[in-house]
Amino acid sequence: MRIRRWKLSLLAVLLVLMSGLVSSAGQVTIHFLSFFVTKDEQLARSLIADFEKANPDIRIELEIKPYRDVAQQTLVRVAGGTPPDVIDLHPSNLYSFCRQGIFLDITDRVHRELDVSDFFPAVLESVSLNGRIYAMPQRISTYVLFFNTDLFDEAGLQYPSKDWQDASWNWDAFYEAGKRLRRDIDGDGKVDVYGSWTDTRVEQKFLPFMFQAGAELFDEEYTTFRLVEEPGLRAIRFVQQALVEEIIINSTTPWYQGRCGMGVDIPPSMIDFGSQATFGFDVAALPQGPAGPGTTIQPIPVGIVAQSKHHEASWRFLKYYMSREVAEQHSRAGIIVQPRRSVTGNVRNYPAVGITDMRPFIGALSVGRMVPNQHAEFPQIATMINNALGPVWKGLADPRPVLEGIRGAVEELLRTPR
Image (cartoon, rainbow, N blue to C red):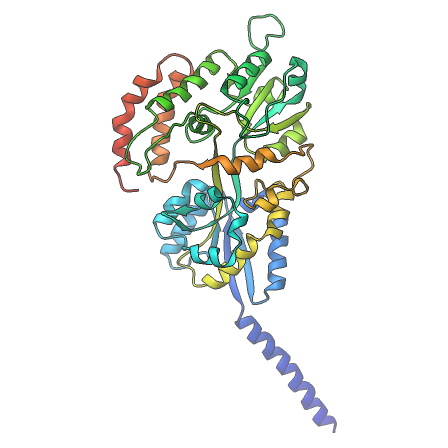
């Protein structure tokens, strides 16, 4: 009798062990190569643990690398036959990865299994190429206007509008506000308080002004350099004049010192401002230009590597990673702006830094346009344009002949395969 019980006990142990072996053998490991989880690594690991608990047949191996290394390591590992399964990467690499077939086309899965109506159309367009979706955005980088409420109050100025469709908040109003904010406090003939700060690089904060003027950097087919046309020149001259008159400064230092009334920046900056600023601040829409409102939309793309052997398991993880529940947790941690309407519009989904009206963020996703960086030579072209415009921003040259002078070289680069 004892021998029989011993045999039954041994059999039970063996069954448990065999069950564990089967479970382990059936488990898929997904390698998630990432840089952008470093925004809140603890949250990322918590989200992964929750996914693994709900999906015991999938294990997520998180590999964190510097952002410049993610793209390079992906290419090397794909070539070597050991690709990662899911990656996030800098948006400047997105379209080249789509063209090279590194990102899996997930269009059908997105439309079948995600509520696409909860995403702004421009958001889905930003992770698409030729009408096909190749990734989903962990968050959206866009430009809005921050302003120093203390300086506006001291100057007796009305606050900038939070409504992107408010035509009264336009270039003229922005310029006049900047002039009234600009001050020489100590009488030494030098400006101490500036109207605004921005960045003049054509791939960054100059783009909203370009869109507001109705200008394009290139034509849709990336064959023609269009910044040299009249709308582009108008945008350049507007920023040029403001820089020369020291209404705008190309530096954030005065802002942090409380000596700048406004600034063009991305939404996550509000967290830095909240922890470092010694003054009151709020967020508004960027001013409208001659062609109306405008700003940029740039995604932090997360996608499935086409060469992965685990497409279905990778999609299950990506679908979870793009869920509303995860988006809410990301947003509360300051990983903003989230691409879902239902998350972006709820003030409870943001860090508590004193900003309570989210219309500037929502509106940015409504009027925003993609950064025109889908050409393989875009980084070189942008550097060429920025170098040429250096003297223009100082008021030492007129933009038309400067841009005409590089048109041929730019269009020659555009003729290389996209």
